[in-house]
Image 1 (cartoon, rainbow, N blue to C red):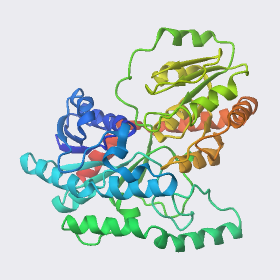
Image 2 (spheres, rainbow, N blue to C red):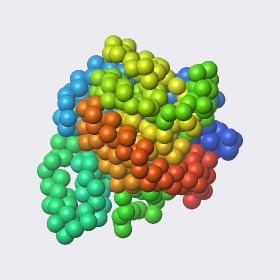
Image 3 (tube, one colour):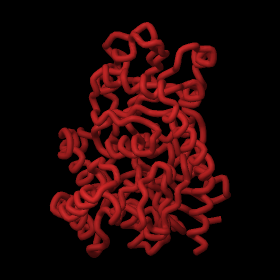
Length: 418
């Protein structure tokens, strides 16, 4: 039996898949300690994990991140850069202190790190321990074959496109200079040398367990051999019992459209409201989730709004999913063979939308606040053209075959043996 420390950023979309990995390690009779924020400690305690909470690292509430990190509320690129600098990089030295203190109290054999928990890699260096990265977002590691990550550009197919990508790769150091400076400063604060560039340092050089599948990943000739795709890391237990009304969807004669903005960016005016308006007069049944946010708009006769609903209760009956592009929700819907309309404009969501469109399993609206007519037309197209659903089903089969949390646990065991 080995003792693993599993790190999870205190974000719902990160906690659920990391809980799946922790549960799979426990099922293999390992000892698991989880390092996360106070808001999600109970989720791991219920699994039987030991707990270490963020202390030196500045904890936060994902429902109001700007209260702790004010600059993350800025729109567009400025907010994204602030999130990387203040939240991801800025908390890393504190994460290191917390993890080292936990190791001194009760040593562990290896680290299993959320890719966004940068302090995991810092601690692996200091403690000289094996380290596996769980990539809970699409891979962002640089490649000679692709445009720089973060620009939501698909791979080039022409000479002009390849020239464009080479120019963009050459320009990126100037664009990301402030991020690299903050990263170097965090390493210096932690007593570490310069290390690898930030874009590479997010990933363990020994093992990267990537969620998703090859059909959702741009082809690249320089993908490290350390990368292993495992499909969907499904949470070990459902979020709640299916509501009684969900059973009626099996007999619904109209196509069912699931509309969700996930649990992180939940302003209903961005996507939920345009989707309801755009689909109000179509012959579809709309199920919309609000994540508990009050909705003050009109609810059409063909729609039902709920705070939360287990995806497993709706997806077997859904014909189309409309989402702002959170990676966990995208993988859940694709794992059910549901084609997607994606409208996301912040963080990694444009990248996710671009990949889904490239895969052929959905449409990218290139906006976080689409007009109702654009949502309507996209849904109509997915319902009309079977190729999108066929591609989504191919991806679903691949996600299932990759093994999920059980295979992730086996890969982590193999790393420890090495």
